[in-house]
Image (cartoon, rainbow, N blue to C red):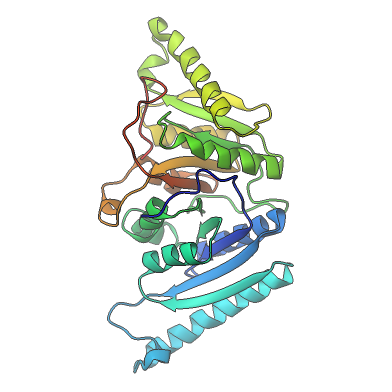
Length: 312
């Protein structure tokens, strides 16, 4: 299992786009181009040719259909590379054969990627990936932040893909709170406001005896920001209520017209990555904007507040 870049200053100099050339991947590609343009980052475009029980043509494959699919993918890859270069981005592209998740993670490690962007299928295929294998495995094990453009995410703007506020949602677990440094770094680079959010149960919203709890949560959010070791200019601290945490996060982001949601997730093995659906993945599937996740190794640690919720 890889070690997260938790002790270094967040940097976004090299971006990896993993794409399958599906229609939804077009939005991810546009996001990657604008991220690289805005942050002056280099771009690596990766396509994994993944067909079970089939051998790609360059390895002696016999299927004519496979040869056609392979050539089409190669043409799409070269076209994406050309578009990126015309946009003034220092870009390179590669096409590999094998298991997508393993090759994406290996590329992240070998090329020292600072940010990975996932291109996925439309809603049906996206759910298959997020709730089944590839995306979840990458999110759980990547040593860098992963930006996922979900099926409901809006198209990137002409100025910058994130646009509105950056929403950092936290459960106060010390394993994942360091991800606020990535949120703050992006806010500084893009001049976007930072919103720190925690979700409380709906039952506490109208309970007069518990009005002190939102105040405690707000103070805890202040504490997380101050502990980040990163300068955050005028962040907004918010407490939302909801019986379903993922819905509350998505509703908050939609109401504020957020450009990005940032979440910390726990690292897991390949086997654990196939566990039942978790909050982070429901957020990705429903979010109106891209979602940035950063995986950190789990460890026994007290939370900053008693009323904490697990985002993963």
